[in-house]
Image (cartoon, rainbow, N blue to C red; front, top):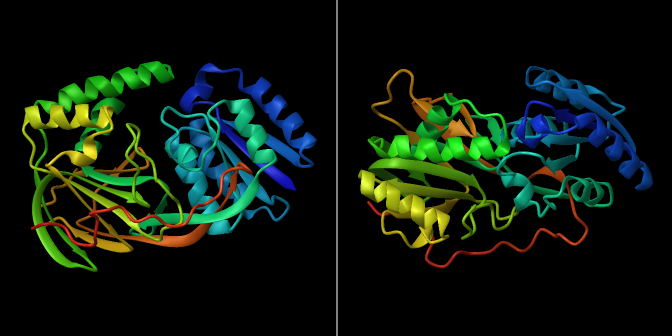
Length: 317
């Protein structure tokens, strides 16, 4: 198979690595697996154009991406558009989609898992037509990312420390906003501090990722209006994998959802797979079952869809 690897030297852990050496090892690993790998090292500003080129090149049969979650999301969008299989190298800070795919977190092991893996169809979600593989968020998450992006960090550890400092800054005055949610269960109006919509419902871990990637459903999570103390408690519950038992969190599983923000202000933001975007007043979210072809380790299979006990398609009013 003719495969194009694209490594973002400015993304995730690659910014502190010898990326040229990683590229050379990748070529050898894929050659041993019977593939021909064309490895491209690019800067952050070159990622989109290089992905588009790979998607449009008829000689390229598959794409391998290395970088942070935003880079992976951009690659998934191009793979979704072109129909080409995507291999995900866990070279970011959180590696959320790579974890959901069951990829080894060691880079050489992940390269070998892709080179010797199977190609499977998994779900991908969209927000007003923009694809995402992990999560769309409004409120707390968007504020955390905005604060963190204003800080200076030069490594994976530095980014994690910046994230912790952003939590402390956001907790001083948690956001509160009105939202109307319209899904299969009807319309609900709420005032909340945060909304997260995931591509497939999340698991119960301290770093929540999709528990399966073929359910054909979005996971929708609302955090009620939070005080500073309540937000601090929710952060602790996340860190100890107890967030699902927090009384201020409600959830549902739906194939599609319309969000309306009646008092959206100019400059409000959402976050999609870790990247800040402008928040639209109306957001149409839906899952595209089996819309993305991916490489997975041979021992990793997309399991049968799971139902989370106590979860349904309607929120409490």
